[in-house]
Length: 492
Image 1 (cartoon, rainbow, N blue to C red):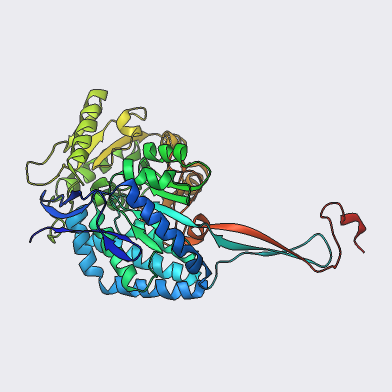
Image 2 (cartoon, rainbow, N blue to C red; image 1 turned 90 degrees about the vertical axis):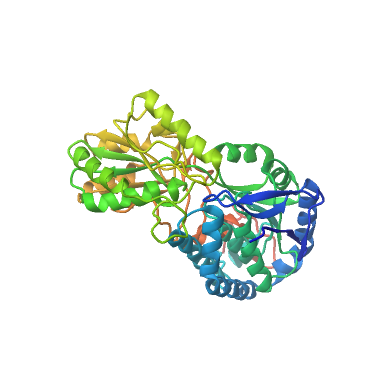
């Protein structure tokens, strides 16, 4: 099938970039070109921002329940096209089809949830310290928001940002990752068909250095939401100035397995956490922190299962692990495998690029890893797992925290004390007990601490907070000038 050329979406129209140039979108399982996308300029972004500015007044004034009805329509349309979108995602991003279906389902779930927020958008009321005075808060839109999304969840993460931004009354300039623009475009097509007014959402493809920088630097853009690398997140904070900036960055997540753990259950969690999405998740379990009493047995169990994993095209039903996103990702996994060897960790499985078409790397396991090794500290974003031995729960928690990131964490134990120590002491935004580091639900907040983010959370009610501002309201019906703090002793 001949690869198509796709356009930007600005002012409700599909338009070419002023550059008249395009870039290739590749299938990571085959290396084939599946589409050509606009190599946009800063002028294209300015057009998109102007479009969002002109649409803001009418969109923000539309009652939130009406905006919610439109989102519910979007959710229904995504559901109707779920299988089609999942197959496009597997073709473009590489994750196996069952995972791609889950990615689309996340988009459905967050859209339905945010549609319901159209009838809430809660503020709160509180007593005033003065008589005949009423006090409350309301939620107000930020204005124009710039959304910059990654390639690993190419429909779910855009939906996590777009839907709360829309329900709060913002208008949008959206830049998807250049490795997966087709999934994002298909979502925009659905939003367009669902009746979102022209100019409310604008879609611009291209490089981070051009398109991303203009979104971040432009003074008309009042909010930025970015998911991606820590280095890019730090750059955005430096460049954005006084704007509302939400960051979801990296992770180096650990699964703790105690000596009383259900090892079969833990094994399933480790396989899913380490090799699901080929390790390309910010919540991936790249470290197993395991008690010395069960380490040997678990290692044998893990090795036996990993050696049976089948790599291949995610569209094939017998594929367990798909490709990495591109050649650079394969080289990064190769690079860290060599680092692990040089640091003295013992490679017991994998460690090589697969000699096949596409961007494949073997599921890789290092054992005898020390907590201070680079493979135990730095985010690899590939199917590379480190096993670290510990003696007790206190050492396990210390090792788990010994990283610059703090997104997700997990402990497998049958001991209530161990579980609650992990909940209390692990420095992460998410802790699972007897489950893997993967599995966020859209009605609960998602995000991390330390190098993982800057305090914001996505999804659930926190998604509303990310894309809105709090406005405090005072209504004085006393008929006289009252002075808070000053007048409190004269209340009669």
